[in-house]
Length: 419
View 1 (cartoon, rainbow, N blue to C red):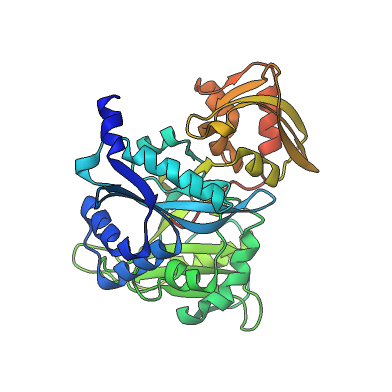
View 2: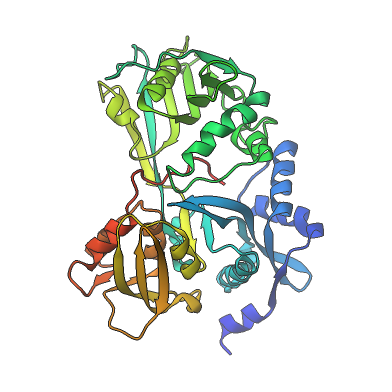
């Protein structure tokens, strides 16, 4: 037995009971150097207790934690149960002892038992999670709009009225418009009324720490008259000018049914008094705003980064559940060191009528790792990019082009929230 094996043998991976959740949060806050307030701690506690939980115990001491929220993710053509991994923590005294690997193995087993073929996360340290089979499946742009002058757009905004609504009443008003985006863009999570209140709108101030950064609580503007389904909406916060700072609008979420509807909402946000900049935390890379802007110096991309990292826990279930834009019939040689049941040679036969994924003993058309397949799964990253980077291999000329065509989606996947 090696030293690492001996060290790992002293750690027991098991379900974390609800009674240990407070202790687990204390450990998590200590490792990440956090000092949350009571509201935030209560919010985190509710999330942890409602999800999947794996603890690493060294005797009676809790040395590690891995949790996952039970979410449902939009995929091309449908929705799938997904484990949104969170609260991943290992005590500094137990690093480099295989604790994280053991917890992830335990989490995969619990995903299978819970019927979740997908797992996802938002990586605070992206170098870590690739070795566990996660690939960056969506990306986002940070955007900044100079509103010291009127926003110049290339088309006329939707003429329907704009109205501010009480955030407490917003879930019932906004949900139909948000739900309409699920079939259009992969990478989005379904929301119930509780998640709208606590997550998307942060009505009790547990997530955004309203006021600490100078921005106020969430405000909601809706396009459309009362009683009709909104043509769009925006959730935003504002900060007035002060010593050494400009007045600003911070946009957390904006959804619109059409380009004119989006133009109406952006024009409104850009015209709020006593502000001279609109900052947007994250927009899809194909956001129509980037094309609507008459002056791209006024609408700037300030950052681009991976957002949702995806792991195919059950490759068969994941591939056969999504839709396909074009017919394809290929043999893939798939590597998966974390979940050997996924590894091997399989024939993917897919098209608009559905898909099958069957083990075969034939020469492969393409060889790749499950990490790269996860990145391509939602349609956001063409496999050819990984071939060009030397991370996947095309054995049959044209095979990658055919697979990319089958995986393609009309809109790029996008994940607007971060847990």
